[in-house]
Amino acid sequence: MKKIVPFLLALLGFSAAYAQDDGNRPMLKYGVPRATFELKGVVTNQRNRPIKDAQVNVTNEANGTNDMVQTDAKGRFEYSTSMFPTDHVYKVQVSDIDGRKHRGDFETEVRDVKITGKDYQQKTGDAWDRGTVTKEEKFVLRKKNKK
Image (cartoon, rainbow, N blue to C red; front, side):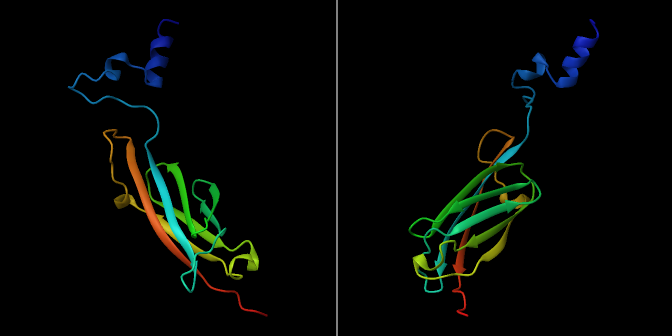
């Protein structure tokens, strides 16, 4: 038993000697590196008028996330998530969900928003926090053809 406990503690990474920052060696950290992804944008019609209450679906199939936000009265939206700092592709689908209520009935637009290694910029002293990646997109929805 006396040999098993130290082995398990070492295996799990508990080490008081390395957990203290004495200035001579880096402080060890446990967990997962992270970054924040912010997607900001505006949704307008072809006349550059904002589309209120458009639904913005943000999907990342690689990590299994699917979130939704809506545009405000000025057609703006904001989405934010925490993620592992690697290359990501977010599929962004913008849909007019209220039909003719707000200046027309519009077609859905789908676009990929890509994040690569060059997008990460560490802004803190924390080596595991890769900062915030912000992407801004403008979506111009076309009116549906009348049938």
